Length: 93
Image (cartoon, rainbow, N blue to C red; front, side):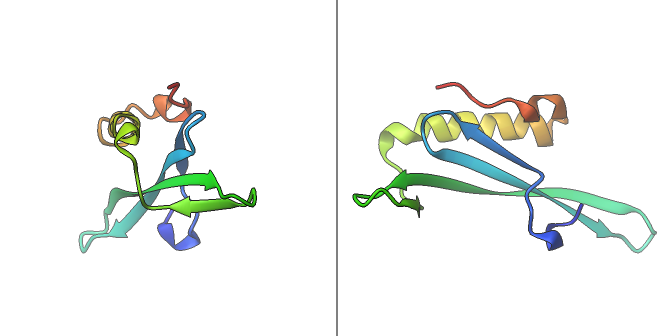
């Protein structure tokens, strides 16, 4: 799956926080005919504004940092350490 279809292969969420990390798979052909697979990701925080509308934010409070660290650890386990069966689990907080 390439990032060109613009859909993440997985979104790892920290339940009840609005914080998630989406992961894309990027396959790049090499000159020797093999494929190089890399992963990229995007952190997102969602919240409801005063009108009850969902919004996205790039800003994190200090209390969000441990949650982000847990998401990054889970993404590392799933995609860097190749423990992909863990990719289907949400992170309880």
